[in-house]
Amino acid sequence: MPNYFLDLEYNNIFYGEDEVNFKEFESCTFNNCDFSNCVFLDVTFIDCIFNNCNFNTAKINYVALRTVTFNECLMKDINFSMCDKLIFDIAFKDCILDFSKFYTLKLKGTNFVNCSMIAVDFMSADLTEAVFENCDLYRSEFAKAIANKANFKTSHNYTIDPSKTKIKKAIFTLKGLKGLLAQYDILVS
Image 1: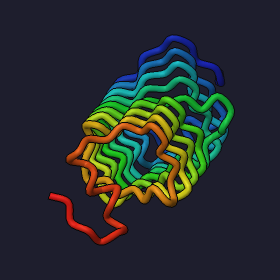
Image 2: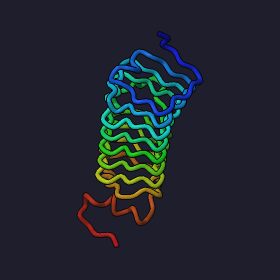
Image 3: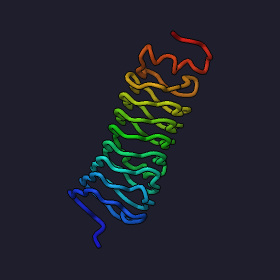
Image 4: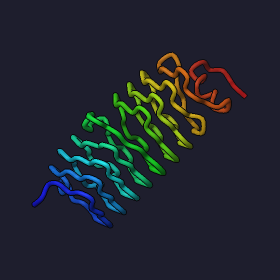
């Protein structure tokens, strides 16, 4: 059975626990696929696109994500910090990433567009120049993160402690100012 797949399209597939293990996918598109039962092991995705796929609670241990885009995917409680950190390059649009973990990852310039990101762990992550466009960041944790030049302008419900997070030249709106001052127990109206 081949372990390298190039330029293929996969539609409406329900993957078993170890069905994609020890495989490399390049320039592939996955549409309406379900990876929720997968325990990924030594899997590489290069220049791949996932559309409307379900990854809820999948275990993505030892996965390489190199220029991978996720559109309208369900990705609750995913531990991305276990991914291969070499050339880690991802983008998300219209995804549900609630309770996921990006702890210590380099996410420079990563785009998060129209995503639900409730209680996401960004602790010690490098979010330099990341874009959070219209994202719900309720209870997401940014302690010890580097968010210099990150754009939070259209996002909401974030609470970021500037004494614990580097936010030099990050972009916020006046309306979002209360999310930066919450630890001081003052009211902004």
